[in-house]
Image 1 (cartoon, rainbow, N blue to C red):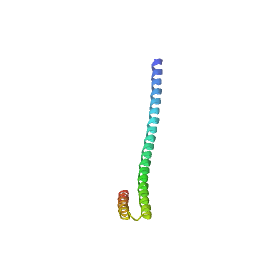
Image 2 (spheres, rainbow, N blue to C red):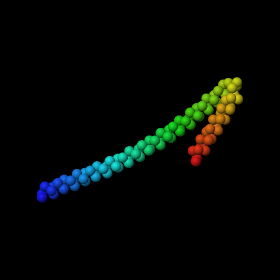
Image 3 (cartoon, rainbow, N blue to C red):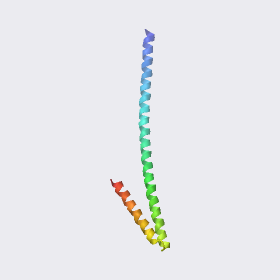
Image 4 (cartoon, rainbow, N blue to C red):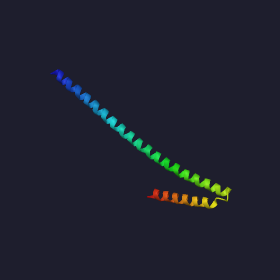
Amino acid sequence: MSNTVEAIHLLEDKLKNLLSNYEFLKNENEILLQNVNNLQHQLFETKQLLAAQKKEYDVLKIAKTIEGSSTNTRDTKLKINALIREIDKCIIQLHK
């Protein structure tokens, strides 16, 4: 009978240990999922910033072209207007 009681206590101890490990791993998993979500959000914001800066760079490059050469001014102005319309569309989408 003593062996049975000891076996039950041992089983209870192992079960408590398993439940404790489960809770720890569950909490750790939640933290890791939050970190993944935060990193994905940061990546998304960084990609948006990169795209905006690339567009700005293109606009500046076009502006420099206008400044240095008067032969392609009409085409360059059209490109600038198209880029401004794209930027305005992006801003509108960001506000939604």
